[in-house]
Image (spheres, rainbow over the protein chains, first blue to last red):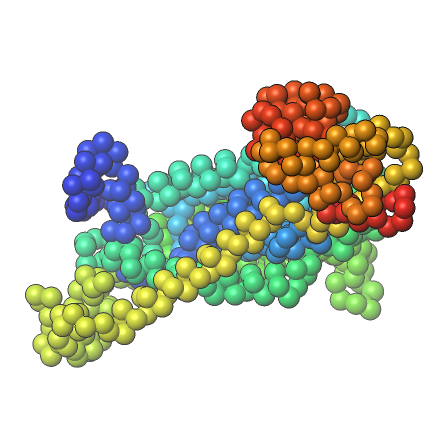
Length: 439
Length: 184
């Protein structure tokens, strides 16, 4: 914890418990008195939103497992039964399926927040690494979960992904066989994917606990990217950030609810309403939206193994980011040149997402017959995803280290409170000082 | 509030009266409690029988397959259903005991079959003690005997001895024709 504990047991029972199992003290220090920078903006509310989403996914998932049948002959029908016959099954299944998308939406905002404000820099590298581990586990969990409805996209998506592993030289095909438990994706695969889909969220919860632990050692970063210098720079987590997080959660839940109640299938693929048929592949295999950028990177490379390496490399790059960034300035607020490259990077990720959703040979600009370049038309999603993939890697491996050495950052403020409290003009008459002491 | 700035408002909490902030706190907590409660019900109710389970809750059965003195066991709602074609002697034995005074759960035989269909006894085949399936023809009354804890039932399915508290349950059923019943 940052700073000594300020918990004072109030009742005799609390004193008795505190000397045996200081769990109330732990809770108090973690979510009540925890000193939090007073200048956190709404981009900092997504940690709380993500914790809620993990909780929702685990609770709805446990309920769905009460009705789901992990067998190739029963799985598809059991999902339909959940949606049609089980009491409130339509709601619970909708919350879970849409919840996966909301979970990823929140995690992407959370990650971009970390990139922009330099949340991965010393002394928060381990915090960032644990976040990367959580993200990787989320991808695995989402993949296993997407297989379970045993629709056409479930099945053939899983075929494609498991075959990717087969591109690893020598051991790849053996690993694929090991995953399948047979000659192809079949009942044994579905059974083990169900088992792993049930297991991994609890692993995620464990890593989340480590993530929060690692957060509470140095404390939160903040939009200015400067360290907290005194108690005046902070407010207690409760009520300031419990209330701010609650408001953000409410707004987030409104959007989540809009999807669940009014467009439950908007984020899914219609092909998954057709029962899996190993003999026919759908016209156009696409992953869920949250994995499209990586799928685009995979397809951008015209070599099977290199494509797989590029795709995993794109995620692996995140793990080494703390050591690629040479800038001592955390927040991009004070790095105007880098901020521009960052905004291009965000745009680039969105473009990669669009590329992943389209057939590679589709024209980017309809009706324009572009010139042929090497193996494909320049006006095709092949080349757009190649350019976008290149920028993805250049951003991390070239721009990030070079900019830190060459740019001239703006002057960094002395402290968090400085512009707020030092200037008499901004202190309204009648304001109560030390507002953090108010309930 | 020791170090207030010049011109500060007096602390509205000092008076002890509820203020707007208190109202907002209570309203927020009430809304949160309502939301949690509203979500809890679907998560609990999903464990109740689903629509398809309820839709399969009634069956039809053709009685002409059952010879006098015979019992046929069919599965209904996941449990055994006894369809017993009683002989005149068994019916007479059941009626004789109607007022014997030895009944733990007093009921006449008349009340346990459809009017004019005394030969047909339709019963849920689980012992009213702890749910075991009694064997037909066992026990001193020639009805049923439960092997688990020794409850005996007479030819009307009434409890006569042993730990079971109630007679074998008569399900809701109706004769669709002379030889066909619908149970449930």
